[in-house]
Image (tube, rainbow, N blue to C red; front, side, top):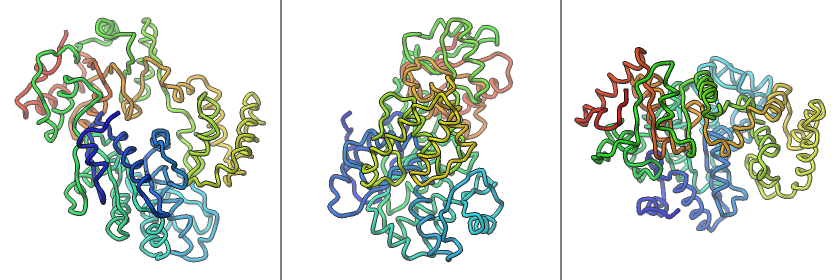
Length: 502
């Protein structure tokens, strides 16, 4: 895919850069192009860090990069804070009582900073705050940087650029950490995000800190608004949800790509058939997993073969070995996932990792040959974990075995093969489908968070958007009231944007 003029300018701009990228505008494509150019143009020993919120997003960046990424850090936010700051410099910042082989366990929760520090010193285990809107890991990492000169010198000597994806989902403490890297350590940052796509304010995400950086003098700011994913009608509707993008609206007479069906609980699935094309990919998105699973059951009972895509048990693993179980599951389930992909997924990978390829392959093949025997399987996984310097907890082994041995979880790894699916709109972020089906009752639009959710859900659709409006529901009435108020700001109405069918 070629770069647009705006994307080219972003790739060519040196120094601190922040990009506000609306849905479908080629955010990852642009970031990957910039990473590739800057790695290729670097002439000293330093490397880059590309930091994401999920292992899946980190893997996507690695897969798209066609340059040598050996020695570069491409992994999650927490991995960066833990592997590059907390583990190596905890002792230097806080003393010899923290000189230990630290593990992480996100099930371990405490009320305040001192309790967290005490637990680390006594048990050598890193946990999190009980209040999910506070971030112990990044608070600790920032304090270590402030106390440890050697930690600061290390990061300055190692990294010439740090890329942070989905910045709108950063909390206040994460933002303080990243701003310290550029303001105090003079490490260039490339930040990309979109406050309209913030889904995690309930756990502390602060999209307003992203918006503040847009006005920061030390950053060059860009806006990417051209949606290459969705057709014009869907773009119009989604852009009108927010004042700052409403100016992108362009009048259109053809309204056949967004259909609003007024239904009852008994006939909504029948009405869909008149507008849904079974030959094109589609997703029905709900707020809750329970509703998503229930919808799949109803549709399948009426010869509409939708599959519910549940979250695999390994997604709930809450420690530093999560990447390992994810990598093993991919090796066992995904045909084209090889030992080389496994090596790329090792946090803070180095050239030395490729030297253990044959041993890794032997471990992985032994695990694969023992899938039918749960006890032997767990033993072999434990041996691989030990080989890589990790411990294997029984509950994590159970989660892995349940994931790879239960058919309903397999689809999460080979979802490209599933043409029609149901899932939560939270799980759909980053995905795209020809057709998307939404229930308006899932979006009361009482606040900006609900508008963010609605924006993410609608912008998953490429060619058709189907709204299901169930008569008589209070949340449905709220949707109409609040979408009407929002559209009136642009002197428009729902009837001028979608086809409404009773």
